Length: 201
Image (cartoon, rainbow, N blue to C red):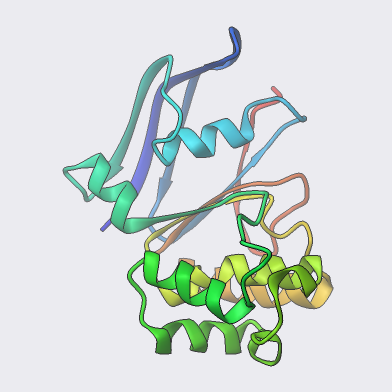
């Protein structure tokens, strides 16, 4: 279980360019953090570093409540990128079940997530036939199907309409109320109360 995340003097370098350095932040249980900044500031890279996919140039990322960072990343966190990462030739149902089972969820939990996100009527369609918002809700379904403490969201709400954003706001509020953590890279404000880390400063 992850009770909090602390960034200590974190620096990231990509393509020989320093994105930022000396970054300090903490996100505790039941809190959300919005990471803002212009394009190229390092928002996506920071999320990927927290997920263990990008190596730090210097500094440290500590997961409170878990002695093993690899275990915390593998079993207690979700990363939803700004691209959906879906197989367009699969049906929405097959893609949902693949993603859910990869994360350790049951079929029942996956279908319940689809129902909550309004996807149940569309599960027989090929992914390529879904709208952008439906694809994003399909990508987000694993957050509900396989509950994990830490959600790392990279512009995850961008393709959603007003109704979809409101629904995700409810789901995100429930997650933090239950002690979960959310770190979201975003240009627009999240639909829940959140602290802000501005990489453009």
